[in-house]
Length: 147
Length: 142
Image 1 (cartoon, each protein chain N blue to C red):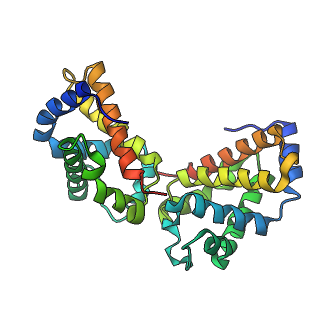
Image 2 (image 1 turned 45 degrees about the vertical axis):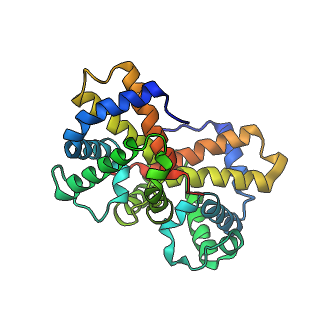
Image 3 (image 1 turned 180 degrees about the vertical axis):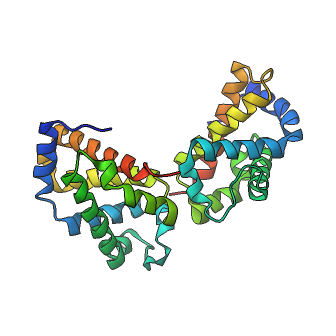
């Protein structure tokens, strides 16, 4: 189980407080679909995904990105119990959505890139390290119920 | 990445033996994949995946047949697997990480079926060959 120090929790929470979840969510999901085009396999019904600009401007991508990142916000509030927090979502992603957990790792890393892109110098190596830990924790928690 | 003459000799000589048990080897590798790495089952929600199922046997045979196509064209694996490469890039879109997992399971299966043949050199040749196949199958992804 992943353990966060007080400093890591403080760094994660304070940065998260400044994140616009709607914008960052759309950005992260959009970039996932652009950078790793095979991830589009789960979104055939999202309409126009034919180019980077189409993807980044797609309203369904933005809406879904917001949903995903809002859920990620639950992780920030429950860093000591990620597996419990994401148990139901884990079952959903395995049994109903059939999503390869590798996608959670890819999205986590894209999110880190988006945060760095947005926060610049404020996104120090220490802050990145803390966020790498939380995205890995979320990815593992979401994969935990897979069978 | 391309295979040396020695590596090709190893692959070709073992392939003779492998092809006589092709279906069994393919099926076993897939069973191993799904048991050790259950997340790989997410690509087969439409399959009955219990051990010995017809789906598993048919798909295992398919996978090994494709490897056979590559073995018969060791100097142009990309050409031999071009159609499969497009299929994986545009239709199947299996995350690239899974090719390493299946390659590993195939190696494990070969090791258990052909202990005398899978020397350290042969192990290296097969690992390289499977890695080459994986590269070809993912090269059109982006």
